[in-house]
Length: 226
Ligand code: AMP
Image 1 (cartoon, rainbow, N blue to C red):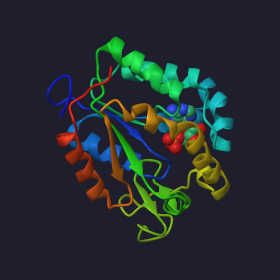
Image 2: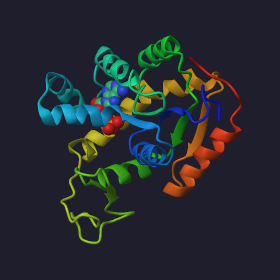
Image 3: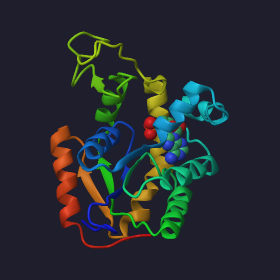
Image 4: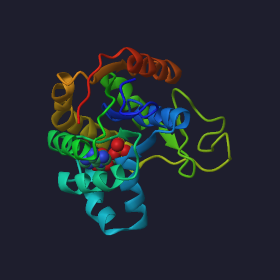
């Protein structure tokens, strides 16, 4: 693996909503100790707590748009100061955010290990998102079609209630996918020449996607960007 120090892992997870970025980030965090930094989770916590940031972000999130770049760049700056190994799950989402990330990592002398692009078709993404149910306490997710809990609405593990995200309705999902196409998909070209970009087939099983990511990290041409 190409990392500043043996054992360090600094990944960007790129890909449309519903591709499994959060799921894989949790797996790698568990196995390798790299911190999952999910900007969506941080924003949702701020919305739930009614912070000024949450109040500012909510309307953008509800409509399937993006929270303004300056807000997100400020957030990632304070998060990255805390960890040497991390998985960026949901950041960057615009070219301006990617440029800011490059500048920040150069300053911190923490080069990225790889950028993983999760590829999936639209129908699968819509089915995954609109069928997604989460245990808000543990973050465990289910899907009513592909991976249902034993009892609808109840977590198999702790018996707690499962909830659907407010932006996982069909209308908002459609808007989120359009936002990805317009604002975030250009990042595939942005990273294409860096030697860091790896595509994985996100339609495979959770275990197979993890294996593909790890295999790619072993074989990827040596390059770094910071
Ligand atoms: P996610 O959980 O990654 O799907 O993010 C949920 C919502 O949070 C997105 O639809 C955006 O409104 C907002 N969001 C998360 N990350 C970013 C980001 N890097 N830039 C702008 N908005 C973001």
